Amino acid sequence: MENMLKELITILEDQAGLYRSLLDILQSEKKAIVGAKLDAVNAVRIKKEMILSLIHAKDEKRKDIVGKISDCLGCPPLGLTLTQLAQRVEVPFSLKLIQCAADISSLVQGIHKENEINKSLITHSLKLIRSSINLIVQLVTPPPVYFRTGKMYQGEVCGTVLSSSV
Image (cartoon, rainbow, N blue to C red; front, side, top):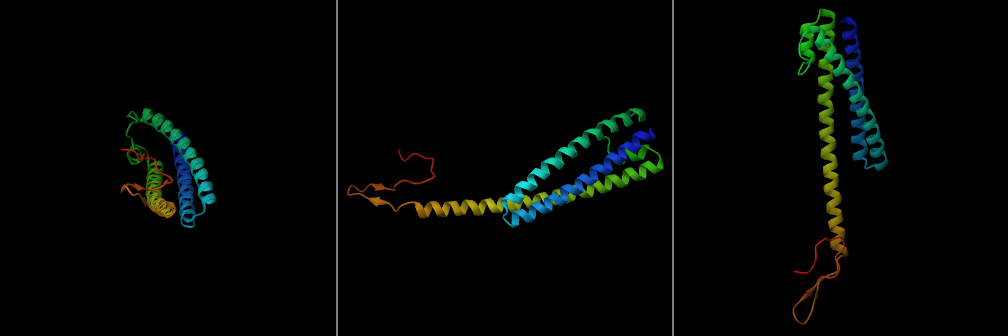
């Protein structure tokens, strides 16, 4: 079981490294969004996808090894946290598992924070773009023409999807 615990700790340390990389990527994404650098945003997106696939692969390995360890301990693997696992193993491994859990937890909180900041920046940028498009549409739309009958002709409005007939 010691070998499985060592393998689990290695996997957790690798995951923590990947989470650190993801946090750095999210900070780069924030800079690219603020600088309105579309190429940089796209490059960051590709890096994020790559890191996320690596995290997913490590997570599958972690689930597998936790399942094997839980079988050896005679407890169900479903819902078994690192803290609970640390309480069931001997001292050098339990301390390392608690340290890994704390490290990953703080990294995930940082990732969540950066992700929320980036989300709000993107949402704000989209609102600015929409208002710019609306302004352009208003400037391009010709003023209404009134006929003798009192009917009004608005002209061709670019970008609308509604029919003018009632």
